[in-house]
Length: 383
Ligand code: PLP
Image (cartoon, rainbow, N blue to C red; front, side, top):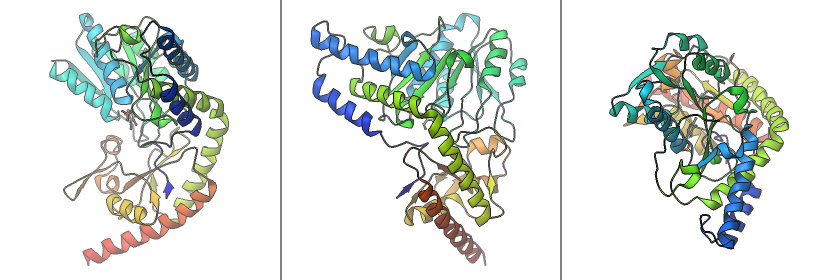
């Protein structure tokens, strides 16, 4: 299989696997226990906290381990909204957020909060000026760092400056950006930032929330004071340790890997336009992640193309959802003003540390054949 779906999940780095296995074998004790075995387990968590903090330019005391991106987004959006409630019950999120953030906003809506939506431009990013017209009682603004479907990078630092000037706090879902582009929570100016291990070479089911400085937040999961009282529950020790190793590796390789992936992306995009002149690359002119290409081949529906690619050994993904035979266009592309008939033809190709130049060449040849075959069968069905 040529795996071009790293934004969905990227293979666990061997070093992270080894650390996880060693942790399972060696650290049986509860990290909250006061005996020596417990304290060794605690030390392993604190080491991982430093590794994660270092990837994000945070202090280790600001890192809260959670069960992944979805939980981190809920903890931040709902926990901050609760903590800021005496100033207002209004939260703003962008139209292109991941379901995890939309889901957290839905929870707040059920509780009577008002949700403002920030639109995206045709190139797929949020214009920072929209912050200036948000109602004065907006307490929290949520904007992701990189969109999971298009890879388009968002102007989080400028949005945060404008939001802070108006007294709002800022949450940033950096799940897709972490390990792919440099992140510094101080430069970004975020109050709450979330990452997930399985997008950067760690295992699934573990992530981190960075709560900067004295940013107000209430815990969702309450228990025995774990994670500075911000996330109850015995820690996922093997997952946390492996996440720390993956974060350290990603930080060390960021510069070289970013340049390598960018070169692969450029070659891939040139190749796509050679094999289908009418290909549309969404967010093409915007600053984007080095590893993500979202492309529509007009007339080739994404579900058919995905199946054809899978049969030929190429794994990619479609932003569109397929419900009972009908293809629903991706809300992100619709928010960018992409026409529905083009949006239902969009595929996302995302590269990672296992992707080679040879795989890019081989996948291009296969994509060309599959686009041709799907278009021909669609035209045949119409005739
Ligand atoms: N946020 C973004 C931007 C994502 O891409 C994802 C996963 O696809 C998540 C949040 C959810 O992360 P997790 O799978 O760790 O819950």
